[in-house]
Image 1 (tube, rainbow, N blue to C red):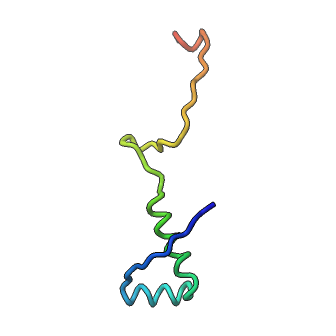
Image 2 (cartoon, rainbow, N blue to C red):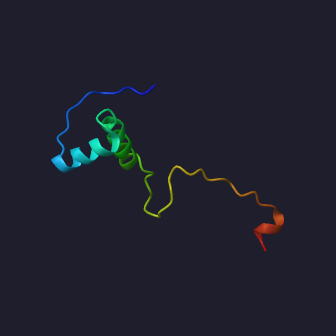
Image 3 (tube, rainbow, N blue to C red):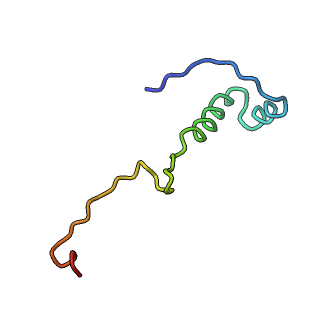
Length: 68
């Protein structure tokens, strides 16, 4: 279950006008949650540019693979 917190943010006038025009006065919170959540919760990459959430798997080797 997701809980919501009420907060106050300060927006530039032009951004506020654009948000009202695009999402309506009742859709601003959802739009901001979507934008901020997407940016903050991006998949983090390791220094080798691999996604650390990927699962590794053990390679099944048999006698022929080891010394070929």
